Length: 174
Image 1 (cartoon, rainbow, N blue to C red):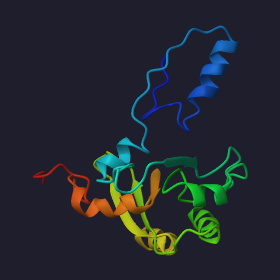
Image 2 (image 1 turned 45 degrees about the horizontal axis):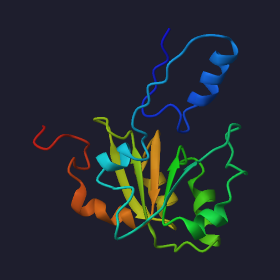
Image 3 (image 1 turned 90 degrees about the vertical axis):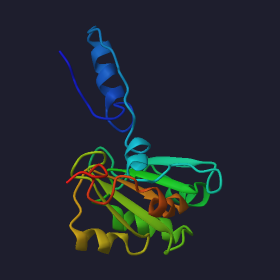
Image 4 (image 1 turned 180 degrees about the vertical axis):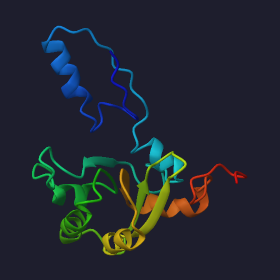
């Protein structure tokens, strides 16, 4: 039997939960990690998750809890204060609430945000906006999940590092 997941199954992918269930049932298993979207998907979109001139820390956070709500267990104020770059997995549906919490905790409304939809696929789309305007921009653009959302100054580097192009095609592809 095989359970195939994209990215790293142990980063917001329930890989740990599933492996524990297999271990408890006495079923042998292997975990073969991939590159998580918060790193690989952003790099493919021309956004380095770290850069020495911008940040020395990054925080990865889920955009929803197991019941589908904004996670209550996340200390949004601490993240807003302490992390120069925030990467949100599966956060499109709750982006308005998350952005409001981060702004209320001191993040600048004009801070750059990138929403990467369907990262690394031919259907990849990237929307760059600001923290205050990202929700409205996402709705207007009709960007779809799955998404990875990057918040922070590293987003500005996309202008120079977008080697794939907004259409998600290889350079020179028709």
